[in-house]
Image (tube, one colour):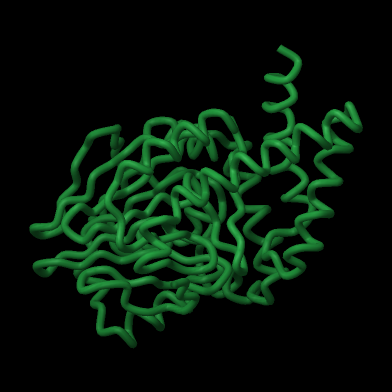
Length: 299
């Protein structure tokens, strides 16, 4: 079952944010961790939801970034500036990217673009949400375990959507939070977004398949519980195979990466006309996927 609204996922995890972009909060023994950081314009939604759910921001001890794309790190600057003792964790590659001036400039520009599309540009005007070099933190690697109270959060490196993607798994709660390293549950479908290296993305899905999952937390379009959560990674593996075959077929017809990317973008918006990202961003997403797959097709 797919749940699209901010709510309590299980006894220790909450989903915060909006339909288009969300994040998670894990609380145990008087401590709390934010997992992922959404797009910047969801900040006021998140703050209101924390208050409504009785979550004290002063209990926040850490924030875990699952990858460095602009729509997954957006509220991190606010929380670290408000709570200077907050520990921020990300992969080594994510910190490398977040230190690149050009990458940060692009992130801030895309945040403004999507905020306007979502009708929330005023949120960015009211709060200091831009990424700058004052946001810093610690590196986590595959196999690391972070603790929130007495609850363990295990880190898995799951590249493919991005070169810096990691996933969080909470064994005690059978809760998997892979961000976009897993499938995106858009409408009643699954969008497999293997942006940076589609082959690695598929390999990472195979790794996630081995986990026991009762709660699957996506960063876009909510979370999944029960039987669908248990099978969601396998269904994403199947969807990823179908999309790869479609990319190969269109590229064979066009022989052109840009043309293929634009045709696939058009197809996506026919199926999902309300997808929250602007078409110019999605063209770039498909461009990365097509470039990788075309390279493998061409040897």
